Length: 435
Image 1 (cartoon, rainbow, N blue to C red):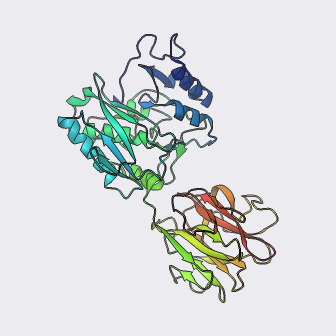
Image 2 (cartoon, rainbow, N blue to C red; image 1 turned 90 degrees about the vertical axis):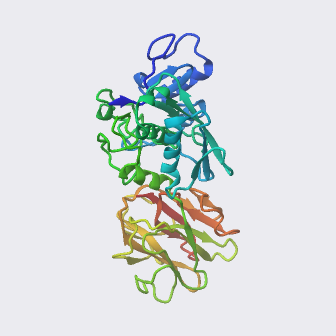
């Protein structure tokens, strides 16, 4: 097993925690990481730069963001900080890379660019770059280092050790792809027990921040199971594992949206579920899609548009679907989420179901939702009240119904319920949950 970054701190000890003469900014980063809960033996300062997990550099901005987070998940494994959807092309400047390092950099970039992600990736010189990462050869190091995103931008630098010259192009490609993964917000897949891939070492620490499980990926790391393992082997291929691809797709899949205007008639992307609300106007997403947004006209108080995330996600099949009517009172498949919109009628699908369609009467009162069983868990739910203003977890879909109030669940989230006003029947809040 080979560590990502074999470095020795200079001037004090291997852990330069609180060394005399340490710059104020560096000390603040160390202090912030300590307050966030990172164990002292996981924080290392080398040449004025602060690392956790031995290869993930943490900027001052990123350390401050970590203090403001509150996630308590303990599984696998991204940071709380991700790259914004507004970043559509990431460029990498590898002007000093030659020979095998240059070839490996091209292959690593190709690993990302050939996937249907929300961003393209290219090597400079290139046009249309939203952000540029500098790739630097670090003398005397076997491995690499990088940092996590902050402010919606990737980390600015990946350091690749010159000591990798004794390894194959595939291994160098593996290390570069791994370090780019950190700049996008991925933690080590075995962060909780580095000995899995390194043969020794313990828990890098999660501290209730920055170690969030990516749904659909394993929660237990194995040797060779992920390109994001802490340490690499001499037999690495440089290619993503299936779980790596799942994680990338979940966090950064290129999103395609469909808008369904059902203000004055049906707007359905499938009719396979039959007429599940006879006599009413229906919006229905296609199989593989869930409702993720709904809009309300401020003047007429009519429901206008339903938003579907049209990405063909196997977690959202349209089999075994049924109608849940709530025009005269609550109709909920679970009460585990509590009274998430007091004083309003609520239609809510069960814990393993999602909203695939919405119905309104010809007089524009919300009457029902179409619930379908899916591979979902109804967790981390929150209500988005959009009667009075936009309430959107993300703006990645753009202004899909200009001039109207919109409720919207963010990427990777789905609508599990909808509430309506008791009088008049206008929609009030969308319940957004994580799979």
